[in-house]
Image 1 (cartoon, rainbow, N blue to C red):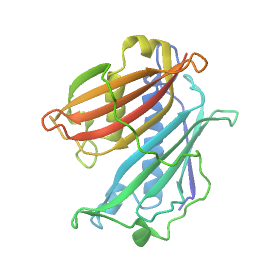
Image 2: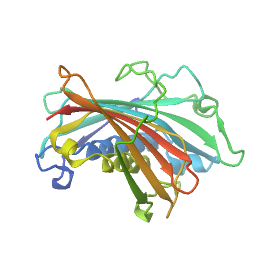
Image 3: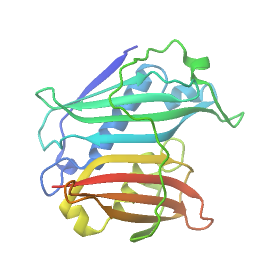
Image 4: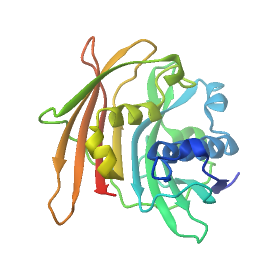
Length: 252
């Protein structure tokens, strides 16, 4: 079982924007892929924990982009299980390095282990105390509470597709990121790019659910030259909160 898991990635043409930089959503794909592969290596993947009536639910995700790679750049993606102060929350950290060994992306996320027969979270240490972890962290981040938008500048309505679902048959965490981006006006997408992204998962959406994305956009100071987007994603039928999102954008 590997303490630090590494894989190399060469971005594809489909991963690239019109500016020939790797899309932020593709970066999230790389992180999700290595998380799955390392979990499988540690015998902690969804298929492996299902046999014990256990599954993983992602609670929070935080990503910092220091530099965006380009087509044909050879990237090294690495991940490890980080030390957590609570046995109810498992932490996973990430780094993406360029060919010179420079860290271009740092990320962390938190998970709970859920017993789907007992219908409650359980201690991951009680079940997997023999798995390796590291005290090293990729970022300094304490998972602060995210606010909701105070006013709505943009909103969009969407319907869950079958292709949005994951192994648990609910909407994959990456899709919520895509939904948040759908609410961003074109003028901001063309002028800015994401430097930090925070998301808190509160509920689950399923096939054919209709969802509403509501976003407030705040401009930073002239010195910082950027914007902050605060988004709320909820089910339209009952108003159930699904996610809270906060993203920081810098000028291109």
